[in-house]
Image 1 (cartoon, rainbow, N blue to C red):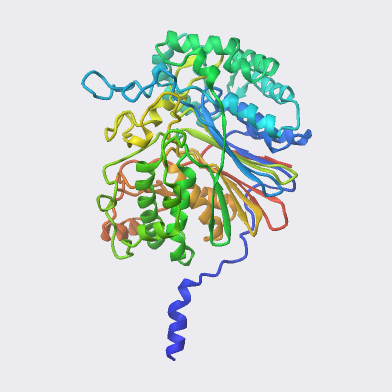
Image 2 (cartoon, protein in one colour):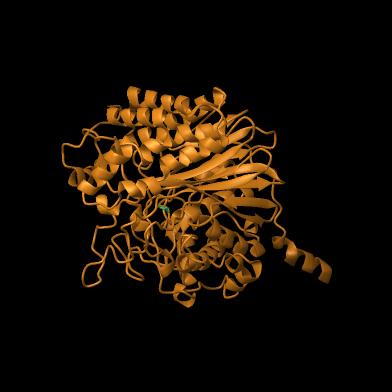
Amino acid sequence: MRRLILIFAALPLFHCRQAPAPPTGLVTDNAMVVSARKEASEIGVAIMQNGGNAFDAMVGTELALAVAYPFAGNLGGGGFMVYRMNNGDVGALDYREKAPLAAHKDMYLDSLGNVIPGMSTIGATSVGVPGTIAGIFEVHEKFGALPIEDIIARVIELVDQGVEVTEKQSRRLDAYWDQIVEVNGDQTLFYNKCMPGDTLRYPALANTLQRIAKNGRDEFYKGETAKILSRFIQEKGGFVTEEDLARYEAKWRQPIIFRYKDLKIISMSPPSSGGVTINQIFKMIEPYDIGQYHHNSAEAVQLFTEAARRAYADRNYYLGDPDFVDIPLDVLLSREYVKGRMESFSFNEATTSSDIERGTVEILESSETTHYSIVDAEGNAVSVTTTLNGAYGSKLYCDELGFFLNNEMDDFSAKTGVPNMFGLTGAEANSIAAEKRMLSSMTPTIVEKDDRLWLVVGTPGGSTIITAVAQTILNVYEFDMSMQEAVNAARFHHQWLPDNIRFEPEGFSEELKQQLKSKGYRINEGRNGFIGMVDAIRVLEDGRLEGGADKRGDDTAVGF
Ligand code: GLY
């Protein structure tokens, strides 16, 4: 009898995963692209149907997003790519923006040492040196199969034919129109007020792309485009010079690789915080077998929240550009250290963030970024997150070149411990320095199961990117969801400070919130929006692909 009781007591620890959930998203036999816009996914797929591989498709999709989704898709921003070849080789590319040579630690402070409102968030002063064109050429040079001119030609066709405005796009354009006019004047060529169903065209962008197709990467960094761009930014009061553009380099990085149960997770390394933080979260929850609880139950929310709280506290203090700061990765990612961090966790009551070390640092980021996932017919996988930072970046639109410039300088900590306009504060590791890359949360991720490609996943969402990616992986692995269900499922977020759980508007009952409150959790009761727009691909057991295109946006899976 005693033995029986012991066996039953131990049962919850051995959650049995069911057979993989049947697919509910688009299923294709060979290849797939999932991105924020149908047009961009279609271009990526057309490239693969015409003999291109996942890397060629990456080049086309990235540029097509600048046309179809200027909200975040870009030539004037930057991003990160994680890849996995069909032979299991993995790697990562950092084409993050960097601070111009003129940048320095106090550049956004007035004579009294106060942060100047808006200077790092809107207009030319907020612009970092763009990395996107360097990124796509770097990828193409290493892995591309098709001539890059042919890939760019497809994107130019899209610019010429124009992009139909969707309902959601029209709402976004309206929401930011006043700021775009404030920065650029009402004669801006970006767009004239438009309705869903109207077609947007950007002839200047077609000319820029023509020159890049003809002259290559250096057109953007050393050619006519570089001259126009640096002159434009400086005329508007910004800091990026021709020399800054000429010195820009994308950098290959070692991705962060770790195991969670029988999964191998491959994610982005610093200067993104994504891989390190997701690694800590998974290691913190692993001993508790989250799958034994119901999806989004009080216990599952508690466990995940307490792990995120501790991981974000470390993120905000220790992480920055690895070329400028020493990050103690060996300690931060060791199982012993991570286990110690959870010693104060109990299901009985919330830990408070002030009890967690490094309790004076906060980093929040804006949420406008975009992610796409690609798998080609050979089984090569590419996971890319790319951004202008804010919605339409700095809002500065170059009429002559046809694209927006980022406001990525705001991802630095303008002054240690002092929140900027978005509530951002940060630590010394992420302070501003000439040519330094600002800390990111972007988490393009690839997951292997049984040594085979299994998931390609990522999302926009600023600091919520990391928790959204982690929850999507857990939804499939621990909560037996299909890819599409996992992407659509309701999400929540905690990032240490502010010390509250942010729930999406739908999917979390009052009863659950009361239960958590009774244990001391603070709930963000304000009007909460969506968390992330995850675009992901799952490789099914029979080798077919299932897309997960987030229902929260216009996101679309396309494949063959
Ligand atoms: N700009 C958002 C991020 O890099 O995380």
